[in-house]
Image 1 (cartoon, rainbow, N blue to C red):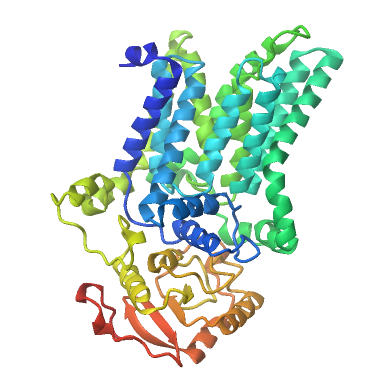
Image 2: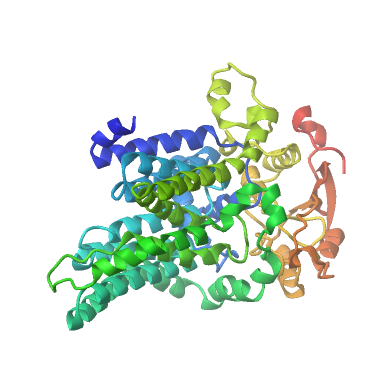
Length: 560
């Protein structure tokens, strides 16, 4: 098969990889919504459609990119859970195709195909496809592919495009865009100064940085200026700088896994793989560095693949250095996977011991990735109707549909836990479309996360600026006082209180702040009207609730 694939032109080859990755990721996908991470993006898209502005009108640790893309799709095609998932799958399949394109230009077809397959496996291990790190990964790889073109440093259009991709990345995650730009500039400067002697090399380096800066600014500056005209800088500074520096490490930080954890969960070895791959690539990078020396002033100057991919894998490791997990390490792991494919291909061309080491390393990486699929395989074995691969059969009536309560058309294809489905159904059927809903917790002195997806599931906008619950924010006195003011001024009639046990992580999210102002306010001004397991709906006391028996038995709440 690889010989047939190798006979195709690059474009069709990359397209085939894209289609194959999309199909695999779709059929391996669970239909169950991620109540927090996906809720952030779906809820943010609804807020943008309502005319709200990120940071000014709602707290967010992300840029506007993911919200804007989904809001645009909703505006064109109508809101839909599947639409958001398809967008996420397109991005993920694009990542696999870009890995293939970068590696295929430097290795044999079989190695490129295997590397793309491994990248696809990593995304199956961490399938949060709407997380902004996914478009950031795709744009990072696109920038790498552009900069690795032959003689890229002499091509003005190439440098402008690489900068523009950094600026676009920043619209999804400001920090990722900054670090991509820094890596691109560093690789260009190092290559120019090493590859072209004297003043000509310095001129080439300065020109490259300026052109990439123009490209990045041309994309990001219009948004930045527009934002400054319409919103205070303080809101941006709080969300992106103050919280990240003052609270995120203490409240969300996780320790690096030790030997005992790695034995129990071999997929956690992936957290260390970028560092191991970069270390293994150092001899290749040194060899590339030697070959750069002594180019003539007009000779082609190409950025070495090992240098650029090594910088990306090393610098982007920052993303998972605090919130240590495979998902948060993906921005580093994917460039490292591409780099590993190139390194292992070189090893297979060396002496017998090196060839044996290459095969062993490749097998180990595949086994590490496969070990991370245990949870997905368990889900499909125990709850097969939640798997996307059975959805076409369900739509055709071949297999029975799983029990579900969907209050509006935007929830087609989606599945959520029964308690959340019943809650969303009641809100969708018995509140007014203009009503806002605060999706909170049963107690707000200790916070891990909240079920933000409920706002989308009920098709109701969040009730306050602080709808995304993060430890160190909503369990603070000043933030709770702001939220109480919003509840009173905004005429928020509905509050959801979720008593689900929070995750017990070894960080500040496990500690109580002792602040319960929101709880006391809701107790005083709202009353419970129904519950589903440990989730209850509270309505303002001057409002009359709808009778619970007005809903079908399978979607009915229990009395409060």
